[in-house]
Length: 339
Image 1 (cartoon, one colour):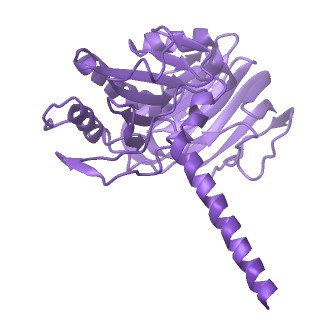
Image 2 (spheres, rainbow, N blue to C red; image 1 turned 120 degrees about the horizontal axis):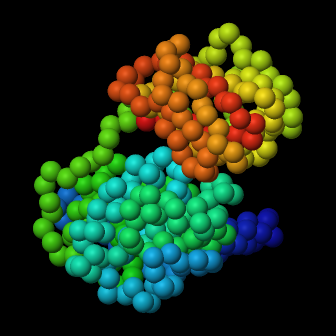
């Protein structure tokens, strides 16, 4: 009996020691998950001490800046913004981030855009440079192609904002879109400025009822049940497509990240519930997309570079069917996103 009790005590001690090591590792990494003090509320903004911010790890290229370190940024208020250039949620956030930088850069505020790619084409420096110019980004951008900084922060989201105070501690975290007024007032709080009234909270996306959809086999789940992904196969578009599913017509080749049109003309048909449809796509040779919504012709879209394209833009948030006819083999589609 005594041996049994001793064994149980030993197991419990091992569990607690292991848990202590795990928690300590998370604290040292500054993951933004462990609060080290009592939250401080000022002007309706809750600031917490999440611990020391990790340094920028595994950065291959710095754009708009010389290489930066956490030590060099001490004394500044720093917003670390994880983004990738074809992500619609990041694109909708960028106007706010760029405005904050332009507004507060002369008051001790710095933005570091950590560009962590979702797709292989987003690793190309030239593509990121084009996006920086297209979106009017003037703050430093770090190419995190190997996910070194992403993993140092234990980040899981695009976009994600980590606000760092003058001592180098993370004090505010926000994932995804929205709450722009809270984020800006958190910045103002650290800069010893009064909270501002009437700041934008961002677009109301509650009416969007279609999720992001991936074409590649790595995350494919929205292809109609009657069609099966294949390395190289011919498909026929069914008469009806159920809500939040897409179907293919023509010869398509599936890969882990995308689908590629490999012969003649192709078709993609989708039923969705949103007011806007975007597609991440590319084509080595310019491909023209002929688009109908609910049977009505829409302006065509020409796909060339690897980026996000808007296929439908309205304020009609209801069920729609989009049919896309592609005239050029080599066209490649990665995702559908909605707004």
